[in-house]
Image (cartoon, rainbow, N blue to C red):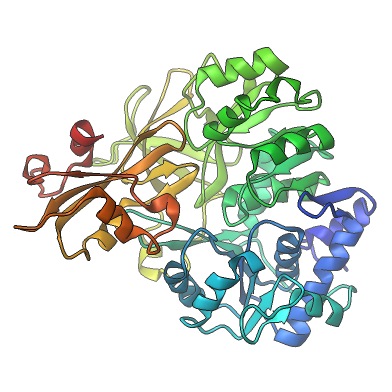
Length: 512
């Protein structure tokens, strides 16, 4: 009997010879049958050698690859919890996440072997596996080739799962900068797939360049498409020239990118000769899509855009703006997806807002997470009495029910599609011996959308420079978190509210 949650085995029965997965880096192409056999090998190794149990965690520190997906589905077949790690983080940042997860297995690739080697000195993980052939980069590692040679491709032992069990844990941040592991359940995956049918069709071809440590890369389109029997063209990472070649070769039906990436593609010298003939729509998110991009793609290729809004804790797809509304409702994130309730409330009174009144966005429904990993106190207040999850985003909806993001209650900003949490950066800079106080804000940037700017009050008698402050952050933070500019001020007093809090919106007026 095939377990209902074993998506690849189901596809092996329904469409065994259909192409499922293509690795752009290596040129390898898997049918659903071949893909399933490879995932079975991972599952058998985990169960028989690692003695992997339901609920055990498997971490992966690697760039996108076929092996990444094999590890994902192999873990799933065992009832394990797949926990991808952001390869842009440094070892110090990763150690806290790994210690929080306490995984049985950690996989890494050779590009990140140095980071993995540093990480191994700070965490306790029983089984380290190199995705590359030698497996010697980190002391005591097995090679992935050894794993695959040791294990059988027959079905693994079925595990009893429920829709409330977590399939994965994806880390997100918060206003305090402390990463939180969001538990993604089978329930969320099922209902997100149903919602995604608003966009995709069985047999669609999708180019995926998004990092698989993000819900966007792993859960939004790729997994629903595997369930529906489509094909995922997997890029190792974003590369503009590679993308152009893949579009021309693979004839995709759609792909996702953030506005910065669409503008880069639009400015590519071969843009007007790219073959978009099979593209049904392009989809964008993370920030509003400028009108000139929409018009340029439509004029050059007749291509339409979908837009949306999502978050790790909910969906992850929450809203969609359909192509026919892309220009009429420019700036909108659209309307709520199926199987999700959305409302706007006054953040102080909790009263429901009417149309065109700005308030905090809340969600309710089966696509809301069951909670954060190892955060019992936080989970007690995850939902209010009515079952509503508060997002921290300030929005409004118009008279037709289309939603617009105005600001964030939280101070997070998005840089090149990555969430950046100022408090994490502020806590690091507060350790600098010359700094008395610091605030970090996001400021507009033509390439990345937003980048960080540190505003600093120095200790009496101290002097420093922008270069010194930025240098202090280097090697201690991922590159996308490092402030790109620094401003100095004598005091934050003019920006303090009656409640004693620094008002970042006022800082942005003077320093943004």
